[in-house]
Amino acid sequence: MSNVEKQTDEILVLQSIFDKKFRPGDNNQYEILVEFDLSPQFTIQLDTETAPIQYLPPLSLTINNHDEYPSDYPPSFVLSCFYFSKSDLRKLCQKLENYPWIKGEVCVYEWIECIKDQISDELVLCTTAAADDGEQENDPRAMSAYSHEHAAQIFRHLIDYNHERVDEQFRHQLQTCLICADDIPGLDCIRLYRCGHFYCRACLNNYAQLALENGQFGERLRCPQNQCQQPLLPTEIKQIVLNDQLHEKYERLTLQRGLESMNDIVWCPRCQQAVISGAGDDNLAMCDRCYYAFCKKCNETFHSQTMCPKDYLIEQLMVRKQKELDRRRLLQEPPLVSTINGKQAKAVAPALSVAKRRQGYREIALTQAEEDLLLQEILTAERMDLLNTQSCPGCHVKIEKNGGCSHMHCSQCNLDFTWKLMAEPRVPIDGSFLTKSAHEFVEVKSVKEELHKVAMKEKPPKEETAQQSEEIQANPTEEQQQQQKKEETKIVINNRSPIGSAMLSRVRTCCNIFCKQISVKMGQDNWIVCSACKQQYCFLCGKRVNGQRHFDKKCERNTPV
Image: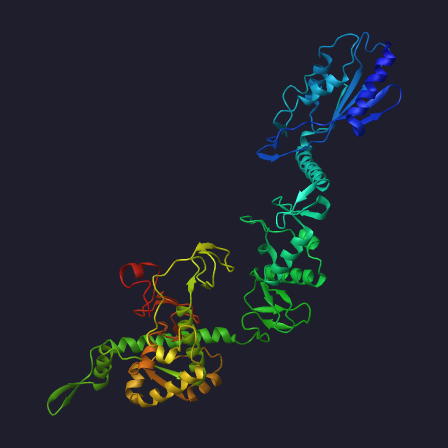
């Protein structure tokens, strides 16, 4: 068989093996794109950065047959690759040139296998040239576009190429949806970029609609796979959500949440446009949409020559605090002594006050509006204790268990915990007036009628009320509102009646003398945080709490009402 016949047969075999990777040329020349068979552990490395890779761009092997191949000499060749350095390609050319060759036998396929063996489990991209690069003789057969200065760009290009090849293979194969478990073409699936999990478009669309309707926007919209906390990309959400109005809502709320998390953003009280506040101390903010100049503290029209009402209120609170401290200092002094018929007698009012404290007497004074809110909170607390509810260990939100196993999932903080089995349900202190049964509560109106009857009968004298009442004080911002609050008719509730005792066992006045907000105890936790001034105090003793130390040394943390 002549050389030409052997060359023709070799070309036909190579075409059948490499198909589209075989590119015929002119003058007995052809090119083969050599694909590397990478191991599952193959990685590319650039300095300290490493990335796993499944596919590498092919290396180009150009063969030029001559008249003396394969009878006397092997064919000439050229190697071309952009991610192999010049020195690496020179070494590979020397290896092919010294490869054992039998005269009269074709050798191109064996060369290709030799090239594939050059890749092990790692490809290291160097950012600096080796010491012997300049000393080696140039080999024109080694054509490399590799540059040490562009190593970072080559590293990123290899990662992108690998991602494209993985996606291409994914689209041309049948995939099993991880939600509905149906086998569908990869073209009808969406593969998430950050975690690699994939689902059919219909399942992801339904999941995204439910999540968005439940308020999961931005980073809170995560992969539906269990234990996967990777958030979805905005481009993926645009592919998933087919409803244009819902997607517009997602973009609007995501932007709003991002702006609210920024400290230098305030909202225009007129048009609700986000406004970037300056770093100055003048509290000035100017809306770019409606050109409204307002104070970023009180949201009123900007007042450059007057004090902000919020600053004025804080100043007045400080003055009141100082007055209250002075008054307490006077009360701690020895009682006044007067002479009556040659005998010494102490002041009557402080003695009566101490006697009442020893008896455990308590009372609160409420306006009609405050009475409705307080009664509603007390009845709600009773219902939460009587129903099958427990607090989330993470965010302490009350969760009701209405069936199923003991595994619970908090939708507020996404915490998984185990439901604690109680020995027996809690029994209310006095169910005759607060509850009809464990799950059916008396209306607030009925409790108010009973409360007004008892309050009128048990109302204490005026001088005692002035010393012992724990009045609920709102936080008015204007003097007219303060005067209006004072003029309202108040009802006094004490603990001398069953209904009053049951109510007062649920409430405690804030220890902040400028707040006096009444808080209702929810559950068994005695660590109370005032909803008005954020002051922390103990429900049992009424003193301020500075961490867990108070409950370790003084009072119990959890006690029933």
